[in-house]
Length: 111
Image 1 (cartoon, rainbow, N blue to C red):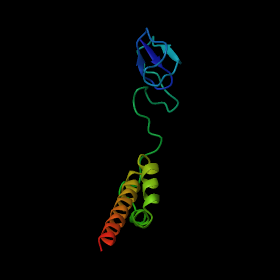
Image 2 (cartoon, one colour):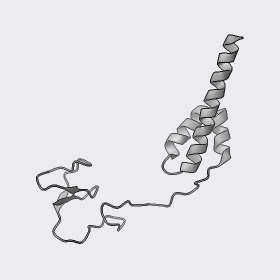
Image 3 (tube, rainbow, N blue to C red):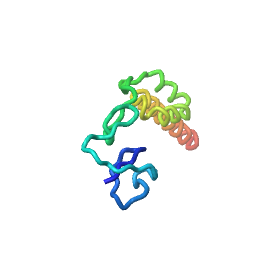
Image 4 (cartoon, rainbow, N blue to C red):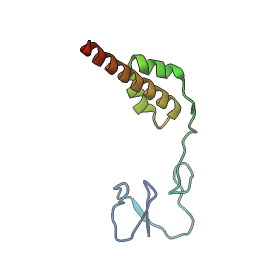
């Protein structure tokens, strides 16, 4: 069995490239000890560079997303993995802002 030095996936011996990441940097695993990556975590287990913070979210980002929905959408997409709380609040503000603007436009067209 081979191990990919890039992503840590176990690769069957007949493969020359990793099916997970496409790397050709494969080594044969001879020992029973797990390989370590640069963060000194066993290969195949998640590596956490920093703890996820701010799970609750700041209402200020939601207000910004409400009044400038495109900014709220961008913040949601950029922060969805690193700041899930702020990302959710900004995304909800953008969604509500888009919805109210759409509703206001439909009502103004009808009247």
